[in-house]
Amino acid sequence: MSEKPTALFVCVHNAGRSQMAAGFLEAIAGDRVRVRSAGSEPADTLNPVAVQAMAEEGIDIATRTPAVLTGDAVADSDVVITMGCGDACPFFPGKRYEDWKLDDPAGQGIEAVRGIRDDIRRRIEALVDELGV
Image (cartoon, rainbow, N blue to C red; front, side):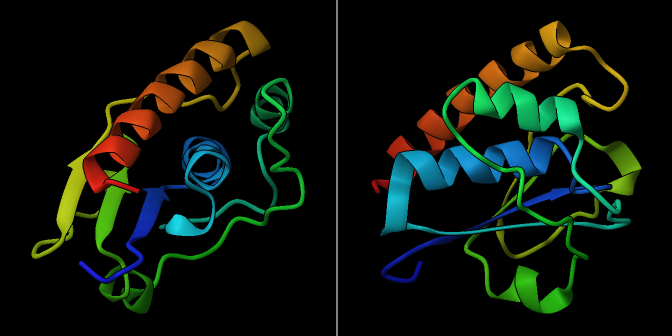
């Protein structure tokens, strides 16, 4: 792994789970890690309930834009984490790869999204410990 590891969070629409994970990793690890997120079929905008749930934690993801997943982003990342999207999330052989089984916040209310958010936070905290950053 490079001196400063790069983590890539991948989700189909890059509008909820992957954006929350990126927001938490940036907030917790700061500049000790490079953070990217992308989607195989990115949405036009972020999920507003995910934005609200993160704002409750003091993390502003409102200005983020869903991005398309590229081979270069994968190649430049030390850790690739998919968000439990099933077959819609590609597998990346040769990388440190994890698939986090997370409910999709799309169409869910704030209570459900808070639970997803809190699960993501716990996983990010464990990832930070594993990376030693």
